[in-house]
View 1 (cartoon, rainbow, N blue to C red):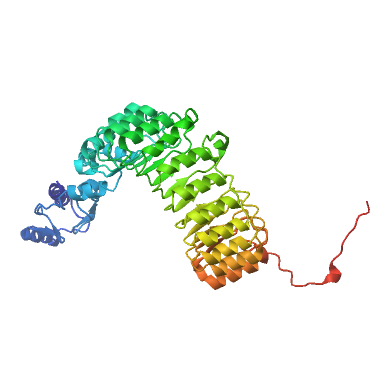
View 2: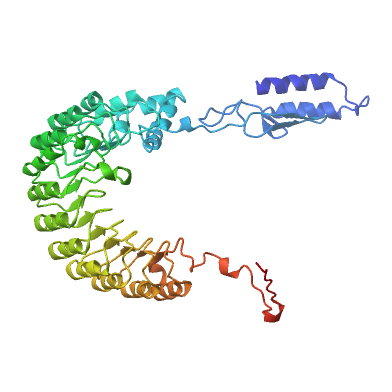
Amino acid sequence: MFVWRWFHKRRVREKRPSRHHRPGDDSAVDRDSATESRGEQTAGIPTTKPPDSPGSDAEDVVDDVTNCTSNCCVVHPTLRYESNLCDLPDEILLRIVSFIYPMDRTFASLKLSCKRLHAIAEDLSLYHLRALTVPPKSMFSFPVLQRVLDVSGGALVRMDLSGCEDITDYTLFRMAVHCGKLNSLSLSGCKQITNGGLRVIGSYLIHLQELDVSCCPFITCAGVVHLFKMIGTSLVSINLNDCLGFREDPHRLVTLAFFCSSLRHLSVGWSRDLVKLNPLLDMDLDRLTQGCTELEYLDVSYSHSSNGSMQSIARNCPVLTTLITRQCFLQDTGLEHIGQGMGKLEWLDLTDCWYVTDAGLGSLANGCPRLRVVILTRCHEVRGSGVVNLATSCNQLEKFVLKQCFRVDDHAIKCVGLGAKQLRHLDLSCNQNVTAETVRKIREARGGGLRIVTNGCPRVPRGGAASRFLFLKKDTNSLMVWETAV
């Protein structure tokens, strides 16, 4: 097409008389004929069609082509070639798509963008997963979920359905029949799961090791006991926090002790809003821990646990490394039991244990030298000496939380910051006694290895607050105080 247009315009110019042509002057014609005799090119532009190649055509020319003759100059604009993602080979496209999670909405949109990407997204290698996470609220493609279960159900080892309130017992059954090798399942917040769902788990997921059914209100103690009868030998971790159904038959929970000899991780705590509904008593914890002698993690937060519970736990669980006792009725006697029987304890959370004092912390310092994390949030009776004992006796202490401990003085905080050599996190939020000078000395001595949180500390000004109003002239005579008689 380009060659034909060029010859056509040339013939028109030959028939049209030139403005500079005079009779008898045939120089222009001679030049034209000489140009024709060369045949192959005119003004340096090839006239023949170039050989076919993958990146060049006669119609797709990168630059504008300019035809110059003796009379005028004609410019022919042409289209520029634009690259496309679909021009990549299948192997590279498949590699790019493999970075997109199949259950993500982006994956579904990608399949609808063009036929090429739709074909790439059908490759079975994209559905080979070892861990499946279903988004709790955002929409996903159910056919994609079915394909994942069909292709990689036998290879799945972890499934997270947390927050999916539309998951029912039947849905769990349809998914469990494909995932016989699953060893970790999270159903936290799946509010339609009942004891029937637990029977499905016990029947099909015989290799399950970790189960989270927290915040499932229809699960009762009887259902949990029946589950442990079926797979209690393989189950090592279970989370039963905020299961309101436990209030129907709390006495059945103690029978769990006969089937949970392999249990290492147990959570039977409640949230702060449901503290008055927790049916767990000291006698229940005593009988429950008698069968769970290998426990390493125990959460009894916001329960009615007291000093007697700590005595039972310390006697029955000697290898315990993590203990969560938020807002329990603990006193110094309970901390003394912990120090005497839990020598391997590494993590202790005493948030909202209001009756704990420095004497109890001293017992912890003497009996739990392996402590790495200690949380004393809102322990209002703690003043300072027990905190210093913990910091100096626990050589592995890495995190110390003293948030809203209003009575801990500035000297104790300085001793903690300078004495605990392995400390990496120190939370002093809302402390009214710590000063900016103490914080500065600790940071200078420890360098950047220690993070100090001082949110809400009135004596520790935040960035730039102390240098905004710098009055250079300090003349007391210019200060006038106006008094008003009452």
